[in-house]
Image 1 (cartoon, rainbow, N blue to C red):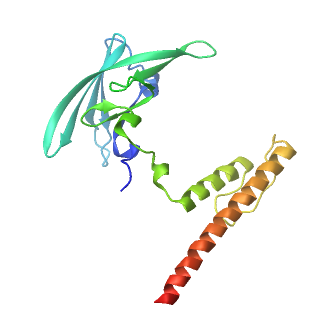
Image 2 (cartoon, rainbow, N blue to C red; image 1 turned 135 degrees about the horizontal axis):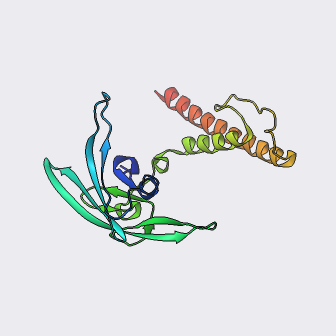
Length: 193
């Protein structure tokens, strides 16, 4: 079994909180989880803006017991190139600057919880397909192994397009070779039985 995934946990995003004006001192807000039937969302997390940070309160259920968790999270900021500042959470455990904190029995960053991104738990073939599709999006192809190269996107230099198209063709060939290897291995296993 691999590491736990970031998608398995509720998370706090400092960028979202800043955009919604929830980091202001004295501001008290309830964040909720939407209900599937369209009913009013039930509150899950209470955010209370404070001086230099926020206080977070939520209920954590583990082993059939509900625990009321209240934790203070300090904020830091960095200057942006064109003025203004960018807020950051300071992880309560390692004190690193992070944009996302994950909630469980305590609040901490991805590294402290030893969480992996979903893409880190996929196999070799899936990673190759992701890379091929990323290149294909840049040069305007449709997703899939059978899509042909289209016209050069407007505004892209010819040499740049040729370079990306060649990379895309190499990635597609690599994916097809990997699939061919899997099919051959499967055929050999079928022949043995």
